[in-house]
Length: 318
Image (cartoon, rainbow, N blue to C red; front, side, top):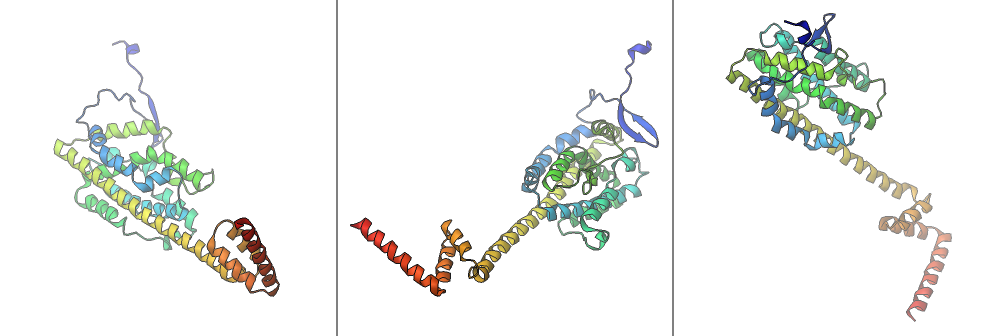
């Protein structure tokens, strides 16, 4: 065979064990029964629901509360700690070994660095597993112990998402939270062992497609992936509730601050009350009158102002 007729495989930019992994980037020849295709098709609705939940939509608009982002990082830490613990336990399993890429994919240590950035050196004593995240973590441990093949679903759902939409979230969070350009607080999104996200994703999918699985096992993996999306949405819902609570508390604090100003500061600065009254706030207008009436020189001025106003009114009516 003419060697010139053989196309050279392309590098996917992934280094493993000091050697560059080579994979053909051509997606042609994929079958609807390939696991990667079944997952893409079978989780489409779950993926769309997750993308359109309020928490994600707010995130993409840059409406991010720093405390909520920190809590999201905590949730991810517990999820990835569970997943990577079970992957390590099952790394020699025939369905896990082909997709075992700890140096390239594992996120636990990166998340630990982010938590140290947000919470300080004693971050471990400040975090705990939330009620919304616990079912997700429990399920990962359950399948790792009883049915390791389903770890394929959890790995696919998380890691492939991190290498895709996660990169968009990184840029949004960096801008919205004004995080350092050097990457502190965003280590989770930085895959230092991967130079081409697209190439690695193709490699990962090809490895999944090579797993020896019957149709029933493939469908169980698709079902488990949908379940993983559901767990992620539970976490999103919890974070959204926390965000709403924080917003309400901030509003209450602002209102309380206004009340404090009315009670304590208007006597010192009636000009502030005058300014707010001019903006159409009746509460401040009332406070202004009370403040002026309480001062003898102002009583005379107020009486004169009322007389002048009454005179203009009478003139207008006549």
